[in-house]
Image 1 (cartoon, rainbow, N blue to C red):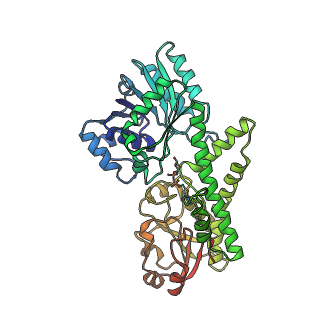
Image 2: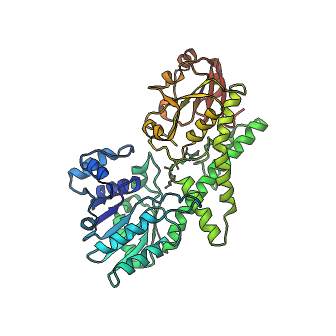
Image 3: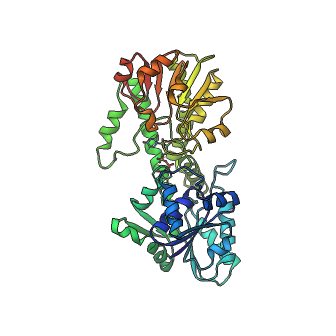
Length: 434
Ligand code: UDX
């Protein structure tokens, strides 16, 4: 089948490359000429494990191409995906749909025959209706159906999430449109991936409900972790003890410094706003948003406490800046609020991250960057693990101890066992453990 992917950002590029790998002919379109030029030259503008090889192979097989010319890409396509950004709107937190609406207008103007326009970007309930209205306005009478097919990809594991999904959700009020989108995923039938065909609005809401539920699960265990610290219990064991109950499930119960990233913060806020506007507020999710925001700053106070109550004039080493490992993405990363909190308290911050430094430089002022974890720890009064990159899981504790001015380790991801770290002479603080 022929697919046009409008928006060659994270979602568009991963989805486009994976559809091409299934054997479809895919054209990725983007308005940014430098992005398309880079992709044509074989450079991938984002960091995602395995994506460079997947793109290269499908370009070589001539199944995947890149262009800035939307009309050319859309002409003759069986399905046109909208995978442009939906950032939070300044002020009210609602998803900014400017790019989605513009894409709908451009696609409608360019369509040459019957096609299905599919929103893949995470869009608030009712966006499909608006896209359909725009399409009908621009091209009255042409056979264009509008469907919703939300993505559930995790950064860092996006390709395997696409190829081995827990489920695929297709929202279409027109059965023929649902059949076209289902056909694109036919290679996955072998993996028995359940395909749920729902109404368009149901599909749109399913995506928000999924992300809000996961954000709630994380926030729940984070609050239990705080309670564990007060009552002398171990959150790792509590998480295991509840997670083995199939009704609860083991995943997303890892306590930490609060969730970040390009999805959870934005999508929870957008759901809160949608629900308020619909007169049916989601108070639980409102609380999750507030608790998570406060938590990031609270982590800075935790570091200060581990340093004996003051960090003024001290050198604090931060390991890990990205919102999670295996990405260079700094959006809403807990490190941003933690570092700002430490600087406000008078600390000098030096940081190391395997992939995130370039983006971090644009977002953080007054931070020094080290070339590796040991250089980062040199002369520091505390070492703080903010992101659980594999490279931080087996650090040479003896070497670190020798390099630091004070042996204080604050492990905000519970990567280490307290007894191991203390045996090396460190003062150790972690999340929700005695
Ligand atoms: C998420 C969803 O998982 C995905 O389905 C959706 O499509 C987009 O949003 P992503 O943002 O890439 O994906 O990252 P994810 O691995 O879900 O982690 C999100 C945040 O939660 C990270 O900051 C992570 O550190 C944090 N987290 C996750 C925890 O603190 N504890 C956990 O147990 C799991």
